[in-house]
Length: 370
Image 1 (spheres, rainbow, N blue to C red):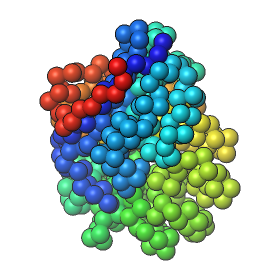
Image 2: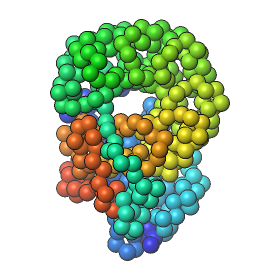
Image 3: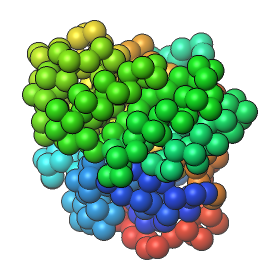
Image 4: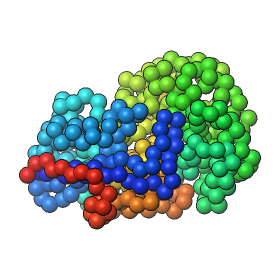
């Protein structure tokens, strides 16, 4: 089996409501859907969701990386040869994690379809329980968040993830309002997305939040300030999670050496797909760290890839791939029964891609190969 052709479709995926984080506001999510075709007629799907603040890529740049460098490097290879495919991509370009993730995910989808097995089976089998998602909440007014938290409880969510790091100084009031509205029925996790900047500010914020029973605090400071986590760790008792600061095995090794976090948030889009994140999860497991698979608000395609990985790896204890429940329309059909995700046992990713929806959302399309 050989990869013979690739189709790149750049889409803008509409959100039900704007998504507000510390560094940006999104009304739609730019995504790149990749279809890889083989000489025996199979089609595998992958997805790239680049973000200049996290992956260092723009949508246009990721399309060009795929079209001019990465796909020409892998056309003609067997999708089962995932190590060789990554070696070819890494020789063609450094970094570009989300573009490489699209190729990686499509290859796993092809391999599963060729083998007649779901991707989690190729990764070693699945855990008995279904993965779950948290209700991810934007940076909004405290009273709005309190209302949303009550609705989330009614909808069946068991965890809330609150985006913080806003510039208005209301982060503590946001958490206070949500905890008052829901009591201790739901767990609260907070993610500053680097928004608190420096360790001193982060320490002060976390100390104010600790009385509200926070599960963990994610990426409180700038991604490049790895040493700052040690300062925070010495001053607070809540669990700490690194996200934007962990992209490569070298990044993770620095946290392992410092013992400055309890958890790491891995994202297929940051690190180059399933293969890279599986290796990172094993590295974290050997160090005694817990792992979360996080979201760049991917559609069902890349979200399913993350859930297959989470089902197969014992170190992955949390999943937050919530993009599909936030979109008003998207090309895939990953199934949710809040708070559970019902990962298909069909071959490959188990996601059907609707070509009509893909066409309707398309901004641009390119082909590579035969």
